[in-house]
Length: 349
View 1 (cartoon, rainbow, N blue to C red):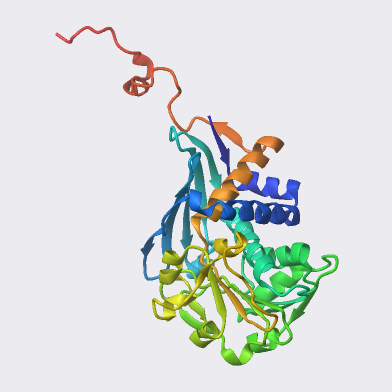
View 2: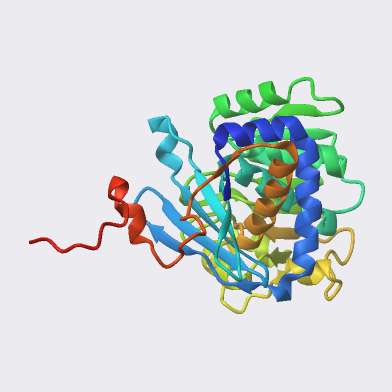
């Protein structure tokens, strides 16, 4: 049987475990899997681009399990009462191909993206970071805020979005969260002043310049999340040139990330090498670090494993017959015969 987790079931699971706790659990599990980076069969995602958005398939596997995610990115969807990002994914046994999990990943993607940002910031941000700017206050913004507050010690978040309603929503959702102050800024430049960490998570499919060199202060860690497909960026190229830049899977980020603006030989460091101690992360306190995050399939692999374990433990979701039952594995046609059974074997006259 295949465990199936639909959106209501995922929502129940997150509420049961607690979003803050699950974010920390995912960040720890991601760290463990990034340490196993060489063990995975990896490839850049397959993307189908249209005028209004993109649809992507993201596969990855190790010796035990294969995972993939279907995900879209359509910034204009909100005008149609649809989410900008919608996703689902599957986890299967590598040896047999049997699907063990089919799950919604829209809510889960917001969690895993924030958990990945947290994992990177733990390795790259200055110790003692307390103030964070959050530029772009859409569907994933609260998860970023909660991850950095609950697990990195961020006490003050300064928010800005061209859509004031998005900032209203974020402030409302985080109102009264213990130990967290949410401040509104009139511009991105104002939001960045005095911040240790900056997260950009805007949605427009455009070559935007959300951060310019004049906004950047020594020692900042920039968590660049919104630029995640060809033709979509958030940082001025000089911000990248003046920083130490880290990526997930370099072949994918060269095409989709902020570094698509720069020559192919611009130096970047894959994050797993820092986590394994092979290369340094931040070299000194005044250095500016950038995590050019586009989202990679390994993060969904990890998330699906955590969700499967939690769903079984808490009896969330249901078991479904996604594939034929095990008896008579060579006789698939019998399932198309309905009430006729397998027939009498007699030929028509």
